[in-house]
Amino acid sequence: MRIAASIFAMMCIGMAGSAAAQQTGAQPAPKPATPQTQPGAAPKPAAPRPAAQAPKPIAPAAQAAPGAAPGLAPTTPPKPKPVVVTPPPKFIEKHDDWHSYMHEAGGAKVCFAAAVPKDSEPKAAKRGPAYFYLTTWPKDGVRNEVSVSIGYPIKPDGPVKVIIGADEFEFFGRQDKAFIKDPATERKLVEAMSSAATPTMIVKGVSARGTETSDQYSLAGIGAAVKKMEQTCP
Image (cartoon, one colour):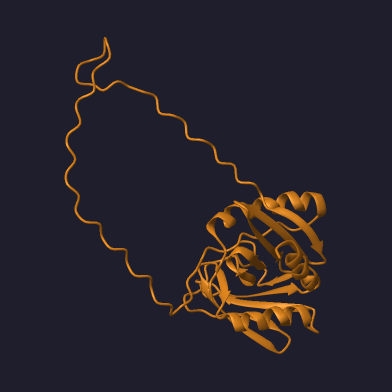
């Protein structure tokens, strides 16, 4: 499965959460995950090395300015680099326990829905904030991509599981993020989230230190959040 979230989105999405929280009481938005490669995928071939280039001729010495010390190039203050302002994602709507957002850059839209746990165990665990989110990238043909930001470095090869009622879905972990293993299972998970008779979803993981965690998410509003993403990012 292709993980479509970009580093650029990771940097900018957090800005939307605080603004939306002040206006609507919504929780801050998560930071989407860094692009990952599915385990077992063939590595990309290395780029061919360029042919050796001929040595460049030595440039003539710059003429010293009047009064300048001989042998020293004239000093020119460097030009300041332009400041790049990244527009924050736009908070769209609150859907019970889920929140929808949209970001647009270079004519490409990204929509995502996010939620935070209603309860987490163990209470004393030292970890960052946890988020569960679905992301849609129309330009790349990616819709409802499921990701988890679990708030701590995941144990290497340690399973991350999402449980809805009697259904269990296994994720693979990369650093503090987790992704579902294949598109077919991902579609089943999104369907289960939207139609679950049980209004809760459990995310279980194991930290690099061996601490087992369990986060309980509410599914109230996920169907409306997905529908809003479909309308905003058709």
